[in-house]
Length: 152
Image (cartoon, rainbow, N blue to C red; front, side):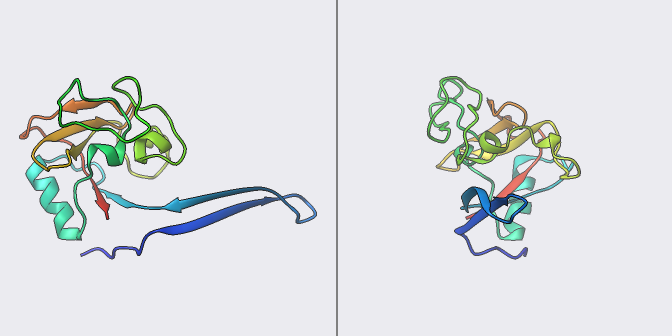
């Protein structure tokens, strides 16, 4: 088991001038915690089992992207505010790929430029989310993809 941080945490970053006076302040709330499996591709079942072994679970589509993916499947639901197309629309304060963008641009973070496993709210359908664009695809259950695991 991986330790699970107690969440919701509020952070505030301050930028100060040369005199030490605060000139800019940015606050945010950490609502979820994610871990990834690096460059290990595997089937949906094996990735889900790995997440469970950590005390985490496979993220929902709406945990990763705000893409409008109902054209892919009626059970597919991106986060709100919903993009007008099946790609993320960048949004501060939104969900993982939507807010952070192309994860492979973060040096030494271990993310790959590829597809990550996600599920629908019922857990009955699996999807693939592009880490580059937030686009959602139907998933072949036995195809191998990368994994993110999330809490809560």
